[in-house]
Length: 416
Image (tube, rainbow, N blue to C red):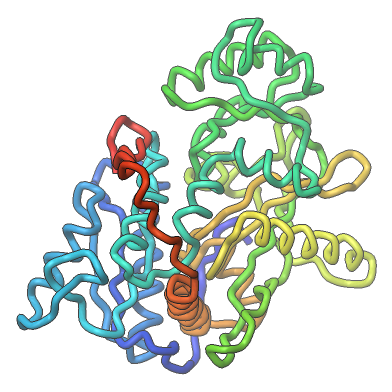
């Protein structure tokens, strides 16, 4: 069995809550795009197929120029006149009961568009699937995620930030004095193992400096994460929103799907055992064909699996995920698991790890999509109720109005 699964089964499920129609929004894909970008089309196929099985009307929407508000406006304008707003901030309305299934991902070098799309949907007051803009901003930034997890007592590998090759000052090469070797270096805000190719693990300072110079050149304006490479087993824990109860009931913690282990079969001595770019996106490579997913079970594995589930739930809560997520862990020499990454809105392709874990749990694509949509509707309703219940602050009449807040910068120099 390869890291990516090749088969998928399905069975009937029920209509997801109040989602009468769904817009499956995704990033634009061109013929020359990196496979980590074009993979979103496989996710669109799975979600659209599941929605058809559920009897939900589907519209596929590729986002042009990363301006989802304009694309939604064009869709809303096709409806008969008479509605006043798109959510609460536009001149035309989406049909009642519309939910956006947010499959927008960031292409290489543009990490900001991923959370910015969610932020736009929040401003429009349109319900959407997966995590909030805040959770996406946080989990996109590996350095911020590491810092928050550590502050909350969730173990992470020893590591730090590198943003220049100077020997002194914050973000310099002194990180190699604080973090013991061997080191693994990666860009702080990329996903899909971008930057984890070639010699990603460095045993000597000279090799680490050369690798750092290369990554800083390839990913300009982005700091690097420098971590101690942990030599132990690698685990993936996928989490899915629990079934939603009555609106007044407290939301339940997510369902933890069966824990997967990544096995590095017949890797030669000296070859780093990591799920790098080759293992994910290059089918002809040794890493792709010799990186295997399994699902440990039995009494001997029970304590480790229980600890992996505990840490994954803790990371979910600390990072504020919703809908679905995946937490990647690695064991050190003593067998102690550490959180490597927290993935909000992980890949939903039929051959990816999340759906493999869902199938292992006995869930079909329709059941997974139904849970995610029901959670989106419930979260949107809870957010609205929170805004209604929050007491308004009295207006101060003894001072001048505050100056408007400037737009937030997005990676690449754009503003939102």
